[in-house]
Length: 454
Image (cartoon, rainbow, N blue to C red):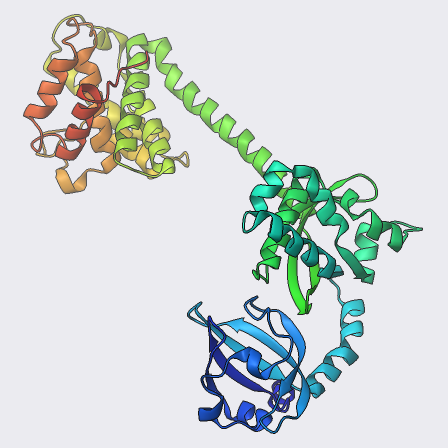
């Protein structure tokens, strides 16, 4: 293939957005008869016939090049974008290229394993040109006002060829090609007609090599999902490659359904684990739900991604699950706990962690359960961790845990209220609690009107 292109006897030159020739290669100098300095500062339409639509990137044109000596030669020209959109690269090939293309084109189309439709857009583009005189550049707006015009657009599409692969995939025995051409819009759903219309307008405006996904209706009435790729093959003619994505979409739908089922089951298991505490201590179950609500709000304010926010919410919802192993008479004791009772209570983070560690929870969940009583100054438990050793999820749940506990009723005291709880975390900001998390928590209550829903 490289050898073929090296022997094309073609040429390349660069033009600006006005069609002014800026540079050319030696091959183009030899082909045109102009020296480099002579061809520069000429406009493209000065040396090519019928080349008024060169601004439409990537169209291929058959035209005539007027050489310096006045001789006209038939060439195939293609306009491609350069690194800067204000510039174009123009490739010029001679008759040998055209002969090669014509000789191999039909076999390429017929033997392609991909469904291909060849389309002539000349009638459609003439229609657009007429419409532009009426609507100016507001063609899309015109279609919004007169949506029924879309059927006129589809009827202007001339299907000139369909390959064997397309016939096998999207047609039926006794299929009539002429009938298909005349009723092509029956092939598309309403939504797909609009996508097709928008795409054809882009093609008309010069935006080529487009691909888009649409729904089509096969002869059995089944909806199929296809990716289509539009590729120019000449002036106002395109090939449309069709890749069927129906199986992939059906598989995606099945996977989504399975994922939703698994997610639902996962959430049910989490809620069941959290609700276990209701049989032991209704206060703890209620407390966990409220801590989860506040922890989630803090995580969102921090700008954490959704998966992290969800993991922190789950960690908060389960943070006291280890209290299932603490005797009820200790949890519900109306007075102050003695040293032995306090040591028993302090085992609940580790017990909770051991209960959950063999379940494939995100690390944020396990950290929140194990470390929510750790403090920045190392005064917490069960491991006496300090600032850099404590996870973010644990710092969030720690603040939410303290605020909820102080503001709510406990067996050994009445509720102290939100303000008292906020004063506690503010007083120990940077000492026991993360300062950024404290600021966010305070702002949620005092400025953003956060309230527990339970």
